[in-house]
Image 1 (spheres, rainbow, N blue to C red):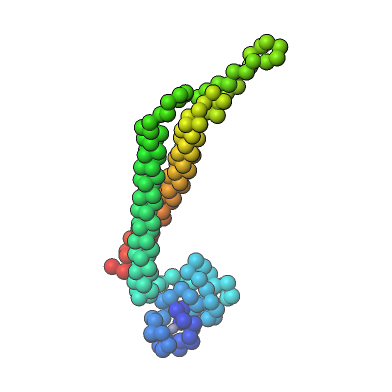
Image 2 (image 1 turned 120 degrees about the vertical axis):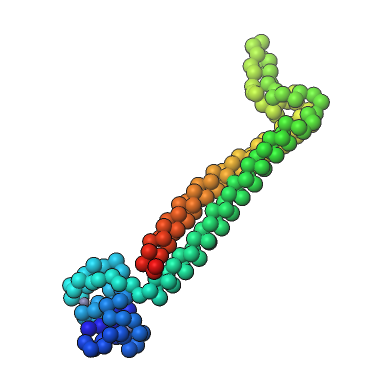
Length: 190
Ligand SMILES: [Zn+2]
Ligand SMILES: [Zn+2]
């Protein structure tokens, strides 16, 4: 017989492993029958086919609960961080639109201009709407290009916002899963 925790040979009359002090049949790492490495996921030994029972030592359960608790708090932090990023993005988007709305408009043609061009044959063509209309002054052109830049920034913020919202829900789901696993493990410890 072999120790299921460390793979050391255990004599029939011994109750615990001399090497790691784990009880007979407790552990998931090695086959009790042939000493081959196994895994918690396996029901039968891949080497000899022996049925593996899954008694996990209490100390291992406790260590696992500790690790899972750490993971859960990390996931909670990550989820919170994404929430903050989302709020910052929304604030920046609102600010961008406020800046666009409240910036004093220059004298001249504040609206988008149309270029009206008289053709040689006497007909008229219109081009636009175009903030770079040749009827627009430099001030108007600057005004519109700045607005477009701010709008571009807001769109960038929106993309980051969507990403943050998705990541937040991913982390939240992972957090819930981890909490459930902790509950599951705790059932065996009590
Ligand atoms: Zn052992
Ligand atoms: Zn085996």
